[in-house]
Image (cartoon, rainbow, N blue to C red):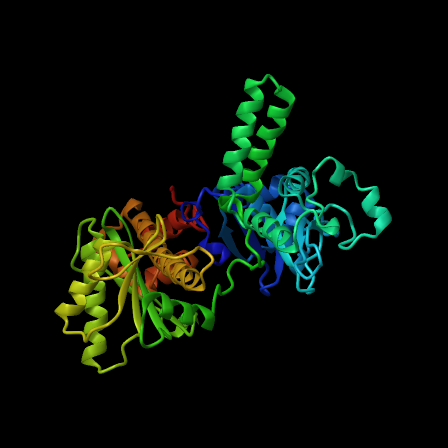
Length: 496
């Protein structure tokens, strides 16, 4: 989004990463935040530039465009921030330009007796990598416990020699199942490796339950040190390896397309469509208690934004806060025009919302005589996909390219609608300032706006020009108009 489009109410109060670009489109700063709204708003506060040091002042003055990405936890924000900084080396990021990388866990199943190892780099060597994990200490302690728990080897050599086997203390204390001496069969050892890999992938319920059971038993036996150790292990398992804390695998710059053709194919498969949805349009509504209601239409072609086919609508017939009726009016007008002009229809229609918005959209299409057309609703709370005639929604994995593409389409429709709605609010506020000027009634206000086009043009005009172009407005009144409009220059700030 452009800097002038920034408005705090659009930024979620959630963890995430934000990206600032300069007027040339170059990434100049990447930051993370526990609360995106609070952190990003701090850069645009009045007077912040005058109070900032030289570096921050230069950064703020250089911001021309911004984007953000919401994540689930602060750890994910930390990981994504680090990756983006290393990928784009923004000018104003200096603290994380070193070679620090978060820990990975490596599993090379091509070894004779595979085991789990710590790694800093993900290499193209055929091994499986889990992570990265920002909680380095917790990862190391939990990995040591898992090696003993599953009886995996901890020695550096996958096939140790006779001398190394004799001196192996892990075998003596039974922390290793000792596959190298035949204590377990290779198949049994591989089963242990597979169980450990499942835990790393997020299947921790069974292991956590067993560890907590051992903790309770240790506490009952007054073995408090052992119970405390087991408690920490269970906490680390849930905090580091639980599915809710799994970190994403690939860094992506916020503001760039989430998916392309892969998203189109995945969406067609998820919805069971015979024809791939190459051309998708999405709708969103924006209003405040029914006032200045607008709608947006955004289009994706082959999984990427098709801005030439974006459209925006002023709601005409609905004068109360009724999103369903507004959605119906928007689709009625748009598809009525498409059919009247015999223009091609999209492969898929998406509306922002659940069953109510979807039902309104389907009713509108039927009312205008539109041929059968795939229509879906995307409910934001749980990212559920609703289809006509189905009571249960489709729920996709959050990494699924189909869901990522629908989220990008929905977010772009929301941004486009909000931007239009805000521009109308600003225009309404600017125009209302004419009502405060003595000697300017409703008739003269309309004449001024019709002649000059906007309050901005009026502000930039001289009193002599206004008096000359508007009959009945003398120089004195024109001077009052210009003085009143120039008292508060710049953009008008709106409350949330």
